[in-house]
Amino acid sequence: MLRLHLALGLTALMVVGCGNDVHEASGTAGADGNGPGAAGAGGGAGGSVATTGNGGASGSTGTVGAEGGHGGIGAGGDPSGAGGGGADGAADPCGGALPIACGDRLNHSTTSQGRANVWSGYNLTARGESGRETVYTFSSTAECTVTANLDNLTTDLDLLLLSACDPIRSNAMASSTPLDLQTVETVSWTSAPGQTFYVVVDGYAGAEGSYTISVDCACR
Image (cartoon, rainbow, N blue to C red; front, side, top):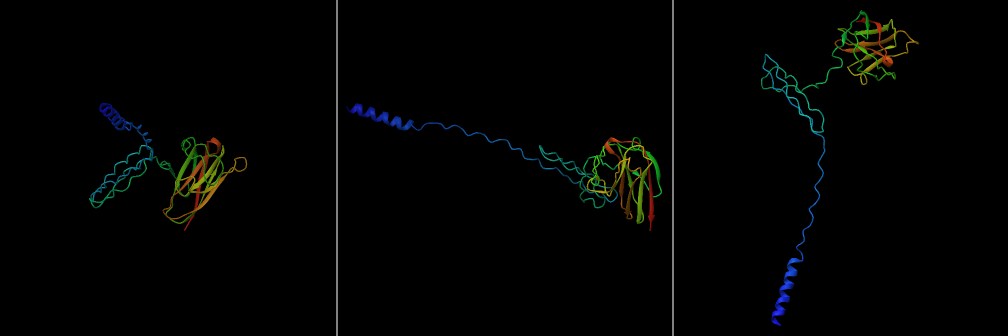
């Protein structure tokens, strides 16, 4: 009898000791993050009095982020000075602009002096300017009232004036009349000493061809 009670007690202890020995399933791993990478930046080392400093290294590009900054040329002077911030490495859309001055009268063509279409729209005209375009740069040493004329047109070309190299935010004037309504396009502006303007001949709906562009000035 005593032996039976001992056996039953031992069995109960074994049940109590093993009843909670159950492993829970492990939790699901979290998803990978996908935030934007930080834009890189770098400053160049300062130059000596005689030479300019070297540009800073190009910034690294984030995994999903924006392009890193580019190193620029450090200003000359104190050798311990920091180099200037880098400029964007993209090509300057006005880097190949042709100089034009008061009194000029040029017989040009968008097929030879122009470039492959870069700008297709301007803020002050609803016309789609998808043709080749010629970009001119103008500046004066005095305050001048300037008039640029586009004539001798053989195709539908328009004349645009920009106060900076930006066809949307800097479009100061547009003369963009259909060729069957007007054969001369004209823009006028006031130029301050040292100020740069861009005069653009662009083609409506893919148009390209020859023209004469002239600039007349009344300066103080």
